[in-house]
Length: 107
Image (cartoon, rainbow, N blue to C red; front, side):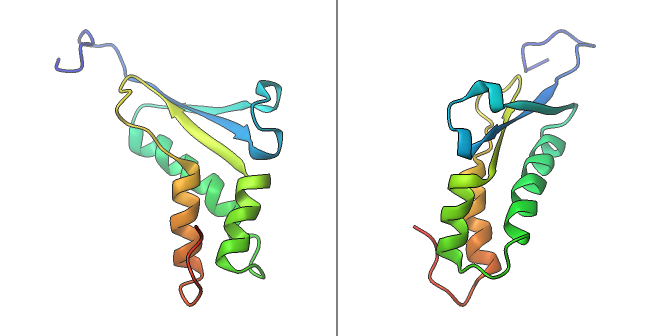
């Protein structure tokens, strides 16, 4: 196999969630779950970010992004391919611009 794993050994992608409000405090971290496909792990991460952003319809794009960075959950993926990573902050910035297209994008 090109991944360097022996045949029959499953690849597992684990989603870990940090709390932006408790930045760098591993006691506030939890494991959401493990997935056989990277795409499923990424979808779980996106759902966490989307849930936070969709719950705040009154905020403009920049305020929404700032609020997420201060108080939202920050999911990330641990897996066999270090070259694949998900940035919740980058995704949140993109989603804020998509959710509020009439406003200036967050910086």
